[in-house]
Image (cartoon, rainbow, N blue to C red; front, side, top):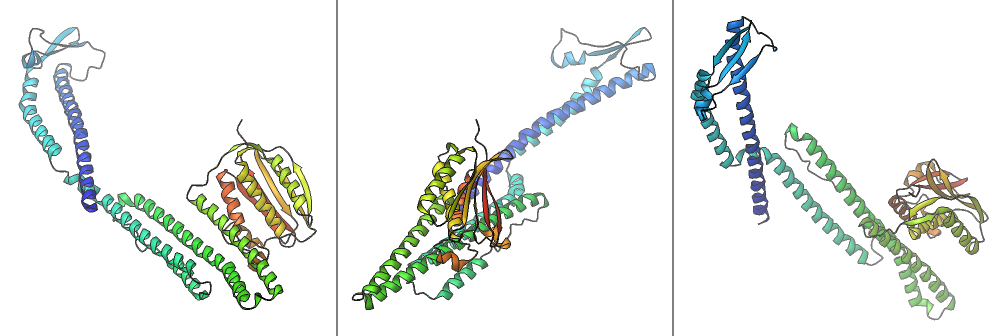
Length: 441
């Protein structure tokens, strides 16, 4: 049924295109006939005029065209007389012979043209279908690839769900197998009709399919990484539950240790799930922005006071807090600021300094967080905003990082038409600046 409907739509489009061509062809026939008639009349008059003058007399001699007003139809046309004056003498050229010649040859020509046009107009759309066939092949191939991609995506999603629901003790090798399988997913076919006129269209569609496939692989990798991240806290909780079941019922020390560890891991899982949900809503376009006029300097001053109260282990410094007006969602921008500050706290040793600043530069607003922490290796800087990326996985895990905070900050900043500028040196510290457009007045 789906194929029949597609075929009917294809034939309907072909017919509409064919008839559009025929109407255009009718106007072309009319214009060509008028041009041919004008050229023949000009040649006829030129021949008679040069027979008298010997050469073209120029455009400035008197010329007139007269007709008998008492006649009508063909008789009126046959009464046409072309007159010109040469050396003070008037000469007349009757056009009756020319009109008869046009009627003699023109009438059958018009009939022939009309019949051909009608046959083309009411005839089949075979020619249009033949021309549209390469495009139809492209559409069918694209639909086939889309269906295949959807089937692969559904199978992959089902496999991921089964893995996430499995026991935490599943062999680690299976997750590596999944990662390798994701890396091997590729589009086996490229659209090709062999028609040079459609080469640019084929390239555009192939490029689009490649981007779609890359997005699918990124999504599959994201789900795999998320399931992998959730396995660790689940395994820890399961281990402590088993220990409680065996020895912790009567051992107060084991009981306290287990409760503390379970609380820590559940908090970690809660944070991870909330961040995953945020990114999922963002990717699907369901994360709403509520922009309003705000000043980044006021926000940075507020965040600075909050962290001075809750974290006395670091030196909190106020940089220049100049007015920086923007149109933004205050809650989301504050969330991005806190992510940057939390990262600075996490990777800055006790007693180290963290500085918050804001202002305007080069026609843009900015806010920045600078720390004196461990810094980031130069080769890792381009990847710090990737999901689940950690420059030092062991240290990040020990400090409670999920590897998603900077990804969320990037999503927020990009939705506000902003960008990041990162400067970092190992053992010296990191400065992350967020540049945003100035609020329109």
